[in-house]
Amino acid sequence: MKRTKSAQVALLARSPVLGQVKQRLARDIGAIKALECYRLLLQNALEATRPFTTTIWYEGSAEVWDEIAPDQPLKEQPLGDLGHKMLTTLNEGTKLVIGADVPLMSANYIHTALDLLASQQDVVVGPTEDGGYCLIGMNEPCAYLFEHISWGSERVLEQTLSRAQDLGLQVFLLPMLWDVDTSVDYQRWKQEILTDTVLRV
Image 1: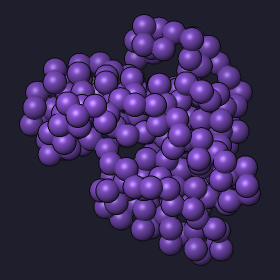
Image 2: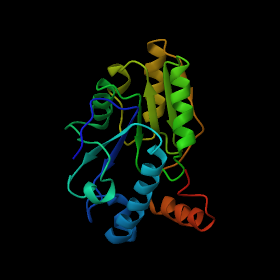
Image 3: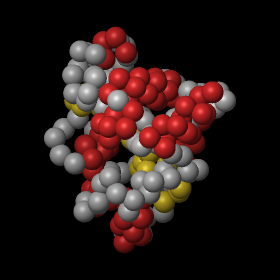
């Protein structure tokens, strides 16, 4: 397992183990299909982050990453809610945090976010259709943006933008993407694989 002190990008991911990923989706389509879906989404995220200095912040087993991303720096996610986990990565020098279950995440999307931060944009956010976000970046870590957020709800983005406004921070919103959490998302994902619009960098 490699370690790194800082990275441009932090990829937050669960270790792809049967029964431990996409559990909400698994209730509808079964654990095996949910795992297969997650592994492909994770593969896309790894490809999207390949051009950048990236650390995988994982939750679960460390051993599986030797096969999936043998040369990738790894760190175990800390205990706590999603906000605490993201803030921890930013406090270690990361510029951007992304999730692992976004079909249309791409290197271009990440590159745009990093360029905006380099131009001194305070905060960059990649919103998702479910009211959350799949990417957040900032030049200086700001704990306030991650406190008292209703993680997992449709109000995450709204609450985050409100807290940024409280501090007078400029927020740039990237084009909206979507993630795979439900059986409806899964069917959409399958359809877009067939039309070759997913798993692209």
